Image (tube, rainbow, N blue to C red; front, top):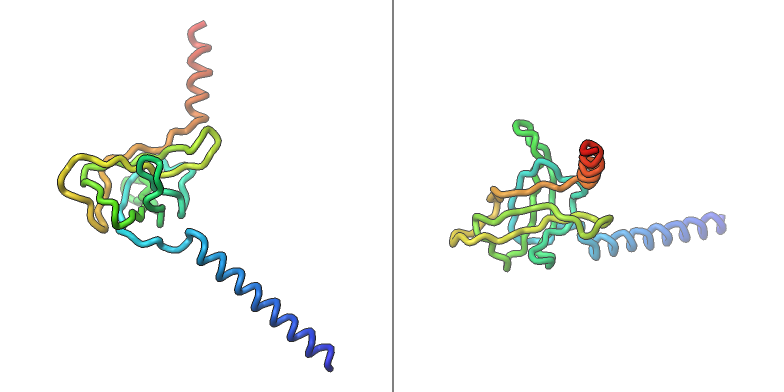
Amino acid sequence: MSRSLVETILGAIVLIVALGFVAYAYTTSDVADPGGYRVDAAFDRIDGITVGSDVRISGIKVGQVLASRLDPVSFQAILTLSVANDVELPSDSSARILSESLLGGRYVDLQPGAEMELLADGDEIAFTQSAINLEDLIGRFVFSGSEEG
């Protein structure tokens, strides 16, 4: 009986330690909402963008992607972006999806506009540029070269 009691206590300790690791990993990761205000942006393609992807201005991280969904009417991908409160974006700002490198991940790049009116929580970024599909570009280059000969 004492052996089963020791095994039970050790099992409980292992579970407590495992829960501690999960809690630590959650609090130190970027999974939670970082705060700031939310804006939406509609794209034709969002290849490589997932929840948690960076939102950057001039290469500096100013937020992250909070959610993605499909608009059932236009069939565009709608991204919900979180932008830090200290970053004030003009209403004519634009968003585009860029690659970190040739084989790297993707992020949303914001280009501030020039309007005096600012984007507020819940507004939509009207000007967007979708992700460029590298395979399509290579295919166009390869097959356009063969048509000339």
